[in-house]
Image (tube, rainbow, N blue to C red; front, side):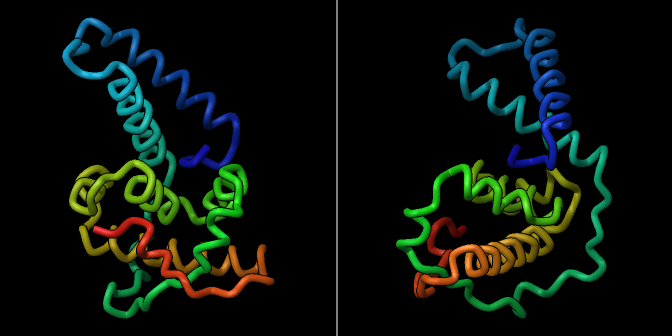
Length: 158
């Protein structure tokens, strides 16, 4: 659900992923963790789905230098359930959501994201910063009674 907007797309990605897993089971390297292998297939299938179904519009992207720090209260992050966080992430545009997920949640570098999505490293960084700003706004509008002093960029930064 972190990569797509509806349950039907999730089902499609899961089905495609399991088909790839079963078709490539003989290629599995038993010296590596099985769970990590499956996870990588599912994430790559979600990325393939995104590339196939989405149009990137990078003509109006901000320069990374133009984006300031994103701040949010550290305590609010601990008070939001994972389901609530997922709902907020899913409100991001597809290009912001996929970069945010790949960088913050999956742990890919901007170089890896750029290679996977066919974009520049700067665009990856810009989309991440824009996603963080949009999430900040969503958090502020959803939880307006908290102060904002913690920098979201401290959660995960490369």
